[in-house]
Length: 50
Length: 203
Image 1: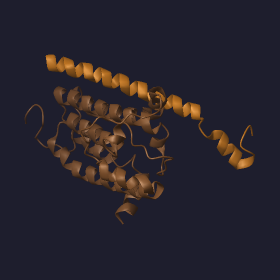
Image 2 (image 1 turned 45 degrees about the vertical axis):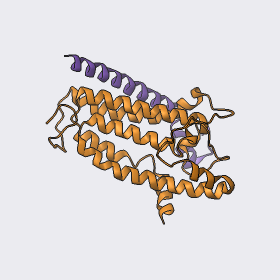
Image 3 (image 1 turned 60 degrees about the vertical axis):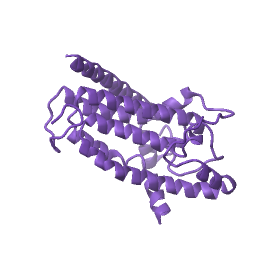
Image 4 (image 1 turned 180 degrees about the vertical axis):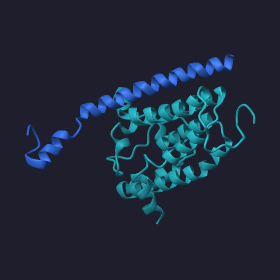
């Protein structure tokens, strides 16, 4: 095992998602919902002005 | 008893509003005006949260247990004892307003009761941790109703840039709720909880 001891525990530890990956996933989700909300707000303004 | 229950709720405080958001999504019949007004309210709530975080620091918000090294009485904490909870209530009210169903606001008393219990638990912690200051602070500053006074300045504050990143989860969650409600402006989704009354746009 590269890190976290040997055997089953080491294997589980090596499978544990990296903190960096989790942060990237949160950042991607944040960008996605921000863009979605911005688009919906523009759409709502357009509907109001219709 | 109240404090024990409050402590239990405090541990799971991030999950308790989820049923309210689920109800808001299921029942939502948004109008463009309600959606924009709700989004503005949620943004105002988030701005208050960020303001408070620059006083208490970014780490405190993610804690499962109450702990503090000193009693913070500056900034928003000089106006109201629980600015983060007040901000949460404004954000939740924003999502409910966006959903455009007045009956959803009937859930508000339950939310207020919930935050009241959590705040009670924190009060108990303050009294134990800061016996000299807590009583006067609790007496002078309201738990949820802000006082009309100028916020007390702090000697030092956390930079906003440090506070934003740990707050991204909250911002993204609020945005996701608003997105879920707002999608009904453009896509017809069968509504599970359909009552005819609406805040904007009449019946």
